[in-house]
Image 1 (cartoon, rainbow, N blue to C red):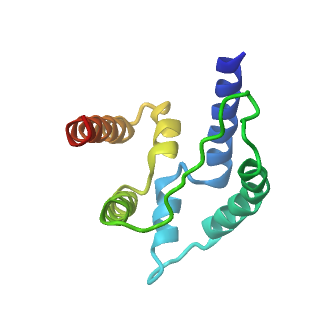
Image 2: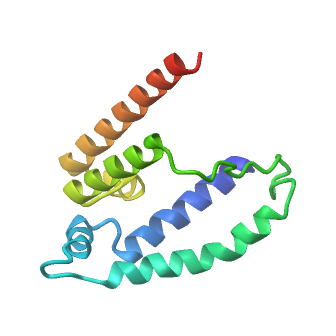
Length: 139
């Protein structure tokens, strides 16, 4: 049942990305082009996502266990550090160059475009490198 829930959540997420235009690199790059032909429509998508997330996140903060009965695990660190800022900058630069981020990349991977395949392979390599560096940092 857990795998079915995960599949349905992923399917809903992917459909939402497609409907919102987040899986279209041209639309994303137009949103990021604030000095040129700016397309503000993705700002509405982000505002809508934040508005929808407020309720469940508020509820989650008050819970000790998740809906599936596991212990609730929410972030506890609140301060900004060099790693968070650096990772955010790296993510933002990659998003600006490619016009896609990890969620939409997996969604458009199914189209078979070589660019999506290269992006996902590079993303997986980066995740593997991070895991390797983290295990060396904290054995």
